[in-house]
Length: 205
Image (cartoon, rainbow, N blue to C red; front, side, top):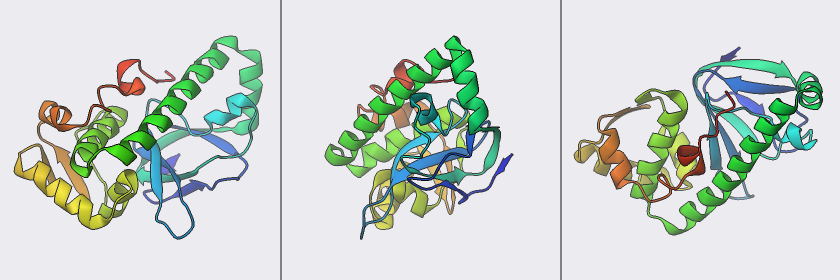
């Protein structure tokens, strides 16, 4: 299936009709409080799936899911996944491991958003995104970056300009090219190195 940038795959409380396994592109899962803008809680790329809570027997989506970067994905009926989880112990164990890593990632993201400055958080966010796409080029708007960081667009502009001035990225409208990945990781807050998806691997494959 094609994934179009900005496509809304589910809202909180929606029943999962399908689960999605991205091959390329990115899906962001976000939370939104009344009178506040959206806040991304995690990215899903080729390492994972949308609909993992089905492994817990929960049929409804806990978060909004929107395509952040266009790509392609495999799609499976939720009923077929539930049947496979009952019949395949190895798949069930893999799903449990993936869910555990997601929970740790959510907690780390919440702490990072609260305690770390915008610049190091952006420097963390970009390598995490490219880890999931296996590419050094990202098609991300100011709005999507602001949602990832939980800040205003102006904060993204200042932080991205600072990274660009240091030769770490090239940022044009709607596109970011990673020029110095090692330098970017060195600039990132410790949450990148400590990320369980980075250290332990959270891939379903």
